[in-house]
Structure formats: structure tokens, C-alpha cells
Amino acid sequence: MRNVLICVLLLLATGCATNPPNGPVYDPWENTNRKIFKFNDKFDQYVGRPVARGYRKILPDPVEKGIGNFFSNIDDVNVLANDLLQGKPEKAGNAATRFAINSVFGVFGIFDVSTRVGLPKHYENFGQTLGVWGVGEGPYVVLPLFGPNNMRSTVGVVVEPQTTYLPPYLTSDRIILSGATILDIVDTRAQLLGAGNVLDTALDPYLLLRDTWIVRHRKATLDSDERIELGSAKTTTGDNEVDELDKEVDELDELDELDELDELDELGELDELDELDELDELDELDELDSQEEEVDKAVTQ
Image 1 (tube, one colour):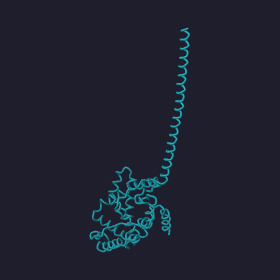
Image 2 (cartoon, rainbow, N blue to C red):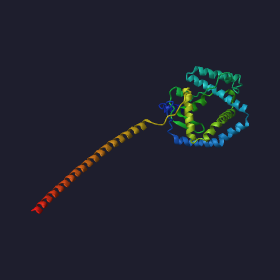
Image 3 (cartoon, rainbow, N blue to C red):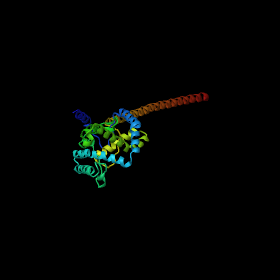
Image 4 (cartoon, helix red, strand yellow):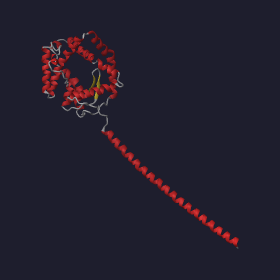
């Protein structure tokens, strides 16, 4: 019941937050996410990565491959369930056939016989199923030790351990079950050593991991091979702010035009003053002329 309540709360949080395939990443908790990312990175640096490298160094490649195949075969049961929930009977048949063939002819899944006979592995999880049902991604979140997720896939993290099929010989003893779980985690980390090297060389590992995970999750949810380019985080509020700014600029332009007219008026007044000055000068010249005429008359007399 506790897990069900958690899932309901998470679904309520994500129900209204739909995301288009090329929409921006909704990351309102980036500061907190970055702190958790740093914690995960430090833990991986001092624990996860050294153990994974030792695991890869000690075990021969065929043994490591067999362990990966074994846990991948168990995962096919979850894949089958999510295929059915998503209404994909053809893919569900593929997953069911893979599990049956590998369990019997592949010695409990240690050998991936199905891929060799033309039944390739595909992946589905409960987070993708919720996406097919129309549940929005919700905010991007980095979980301690679990890494990148969104609110929708986090529901899957809670639900899937309760629905995962485990063979009876793994559940018969807690020590065996715990050992198998740890082995699965270490094997998964060993398979991702190459990805870790890429992150180490990135300018911003957080953004690289976040965007890469979002793109892969959206492609898997949509069953699409088309290129997905994440959009910019431009919001409606931002658009309104831009519109308001444009209005303010227009108002300033109108004021500038009025200022120009005022300047022209001032110039006009100056011109009028100039005209008056010219008239004054003319008047002064007329007075000089009349004075000269009077002088000439006086001299003549």
C-alpha cells in the first residue's frame, strides 16, 4: 500500500506535465540535481568504477557475457508485461519467445540463443508504459545511486521491483538474492565503463548525461528512430516578457519622434529669431543710408 500511495502521488505530480518529443528539458530542481549528481559521481569514482574494473579484469569475457545474458533473460519478463500493457502484441510475443528459448536452450539464459535465431532483444519499462498512456514526463530528477530519471520513470523504479520475476532458486534464500542483486548491479556498471569515460571528458557532464538520457527515454517511449533535438527552455511567460519589452521599445520610439519634432520646433523658433535679426540689420542699414543722405545734403549746402 505504501508503494501504491507513492506511485499515486508521483502520478499526480506528472499528470499535467506533458512533453512534446522535441520540447525542452524541464529541470526546475537543477541545483539539487547537480548536488546529487556530484554525490553519485564521487560514489562511482571511489566504489562503483573500481569494483566494475576489477570485475571485468578478473572474469573472462565469456563468463561476464553469460552473467549479463542471465539477468537480461530475467528482464524479458518485465519487457513482456510492459509490451502487453502498451498494446504491442507482436513485441510481447517476441519477448515471450525469447524468454522461453533462452531459458530452455540457453541454460537459464546464460546463452543468448534467441538473438542468433533472429529474435533481437528490445527494452521496455513501466516508465515508458506510463508515457504511452499519456502521463507526462514531469520534472527531471537525479536519484541517489539510481542516477538520471524523471518523475514518470521514478514511478517505474518504485513499481518494477514489486513486479519483477525472479526464479525460485534466487528467492529461496536472502543471501542468494542479495548476492544476485549486487552481481547484477556490478555487471551493469561494468557494461557502462565506456560511457563513464565519455562523461569524464565532457565540458559539463551533468548536462551531457541529462540530455542524453532524456533523448533515449523519449525515443524508447515513442518507439521512434527519428532524430530528437531538445528545444530551448523558452516559456510562455518569456514570450509575454518579450512582447512587453517590444511595446516599451515602441513607446520609446514614439517619444523619440516627439523629441525630434520638439527640436524642429526649437529650430523653427531660432529661424524666426534669425529672420528678426536680419530685419533688424536691414533696419540699421536703412538708418545708415538716411543718415548718409542727410550728410550729403548738408555738405552740398
